[in-house]
Image (cartoon, rainbow, N blue to C red; front, side, top):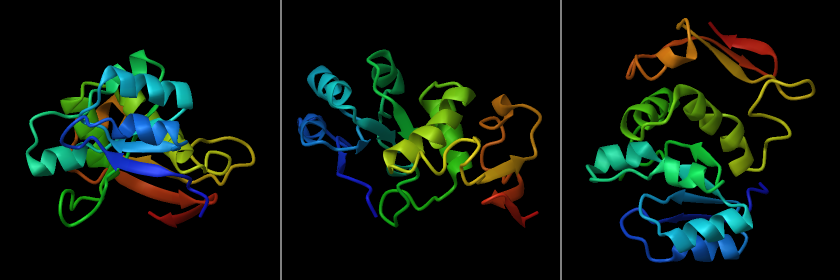
Length: 173
């Protein structure tokens, strides 16, 4: 599908795998709950995106989430994903991932929304088609029952979706 090299590393320990993946040209490195400064620099230098998976940390009861601020301060873009699987994250709710990122990782709603949309699209090499509302893109979006983006993490665990629009057409309301 053209996703490029991806690596799920650093969930439990910093072993240098995130840096090695970046040096090998990984488009993204997932988990990265534990990462050292050298790995961060290699990710920055090689343009790898850090895909944070707060649901895995939450479900497994791990003590530490990835530190999004460490990536952002060094110029490494962050994306959010669910890592949906039966072992470490049986949750496919991106609303919950955004809430966990804001509440547990201390990022703003705006940062979390960018991480879950345009940055996530970049992490799968789909930013030319999806991830933002721009002329020529697919116009995939959801309309939420909230007044401001800052309310999104506040109502965690609640389905806030009012409408789903795919390729410019309403497919759910």
